[in-house]
Length: 69
Image (cartoon, rainbow, N blue to C red; front, side, top):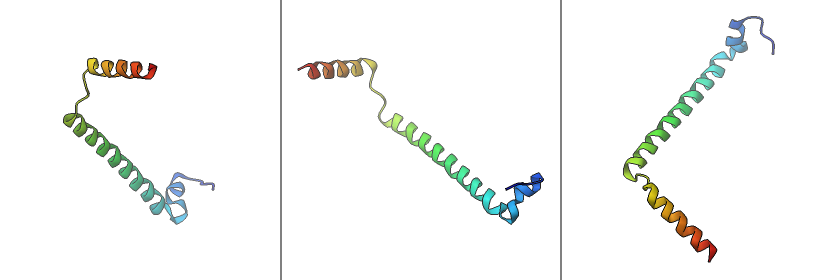
């Protein structure tokens, strides 16, 4: 479609409210999803902090030894 002005583009042949409203709702929902994921990630980090580096290395080395058997 070809629009001769910005206002025609925004109106989109009478469907502008639906089109831009759909984009707006989608952006709000995606933003909310990102915020909720960050909140959950922080909550999990508080509940179960990452193991110390030494523990991770020991587990990795134990796994490597068991793979060689």
